[in-house]
Length: 277
Image (tube, rainbow, N blue to C red):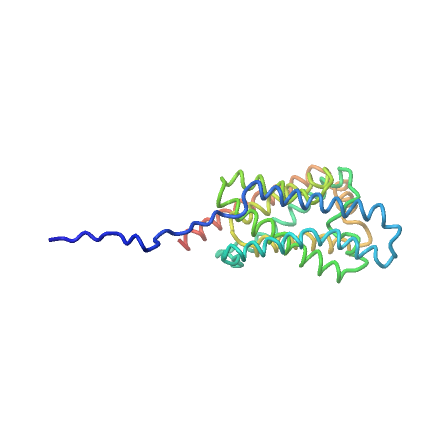
């Protein structure tokens, strides 16, 4: 005679499912907060910089660049701890894909820099170009290490990672592309950063590696530093290059290099994931 085991009603068999964080609404709130915080800092220093001591002007600029995203990173870190979420993975995918960033990122830099050369530049600069020649050590610490690390933790590590768990890929990538560009304030600056933001979002989606996105983000600042070591502005260098070789061949070559390496990178990542599974 078989005995049917009855469930123990006093035993809690329910598993608490935690909703991925953040939601789309929360993500845009974070982007809007960065936009208005950077705008407030910029307007304040633009109007009252003349009342500051000369020695305080440059630290004030760094405060404008670093403080909003640093505060948001601290808030998201505390939220992550409260929700008992696992720490972010810093692993590097298998395969021969890391070296491809050495071709993809410079090609993307050339495309964006040439577009910037033909567009009006805004007075707000989050690239730290003014520091690259006068204070190279500060530039390296802030714009090659700290700022890219904060940006990748906030935008790709927390926001995009949460959006990918709740929404379709296209919707998540479209949202983070705009959100990560909002802190650049001016329409032309936002427009120019959109391709970079889309690339970094796509790179994280395919690799799930913050190491890859951090390296790519830092390389963009490093390229600017290396070009600025010459006597001329890096945009003037690219401008002279387009006048000598022609605008279309230069940007076409950059697009081809970026497109081909992206295809091979994506294929290598897919094969690496198959081997892991």
